[in-house]
Image (tube, rainbow, N blue to C red):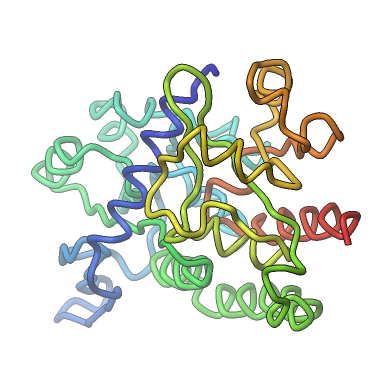
Length: 303
């Protein structure tokens, strides 16, 4: 259960931020051709460079997307939680999510800081008060938000065409097999439960108003928590639903499978617990497609 509380907190704030954000990004040119006004997901309008050279990422998802767009060389700073791809280990860390090292960020002299939804408001306000150009690209609560965020980050780092190409590529990968699952009725789909947290601290999963719910459906599964808003789920409902498959973070799999009463679940007894790298399902990143494909293959064994 190590780090479970952090993950639950992370996802809860993620959902809240996605729900509260009410507008799309937009950029408008000002008198200086080297900069423009950008309105981020929190409706903050910030003057940012048209062609940034030194970028600090305060979000694992942002970091991964920047690399996917071929501009990892722009990153001069990242958080401790930015761990993919392997090349990020060579980039200076500016601390965790709740304990950012503001002095280190300033020392890196960034011309743009891009954050996600987990950065404390106090830290964000402090950075902006110091004149640091900072924008927020939050995680969305529908799967298509992945494409939206790729487009936004592409615009911010001057890789709009590359972002469009990546989005087209990801969409084609999904569309190649998606049609057969889109119309599949619930009673023909294997039932699925995603473990976010479990044990004495409570049971937490991804409800129907999350992009993770979309991800499970796109893989051909039926999320048993689809009727729930948010992340809390009752143990009684889990045991009653007795899903065909359990998805869980790789590092928590063994503990879950050896903890009562979860040992009574058919998925545990029949070896249908899918241990997965949490980032591929918790973060809104291009590797979500890999996660969907893996789940799809596994779910097909139940057909």
